[in-house]
Length: 108
Image (tube, rainbow, N blue to C red; front, side):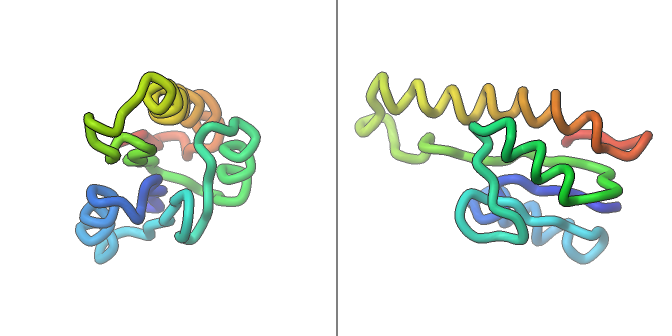
């Protein structure tokens, strides 16, 4: 299977990749360094990523944008950005990505 892992360099994403890498073709996607760089707050960037990767069987969205700052450093403004990037980013990944998955593809 060809699996896109978004949030590949994060704590959870990097562990998921360790499990998948031996058995599947894993495309690592992150905001900083990976096979593909992605700003999940940008629908245009999401579309560009999917267009650049063909024959996708599964997408795993594990990005953790700004949520790792901890509660004491969280402000309403930081929380709004986190919601925008995590929640709406995942919704856009599904809405856009559904058109690029193989017929029996899925999101994990």
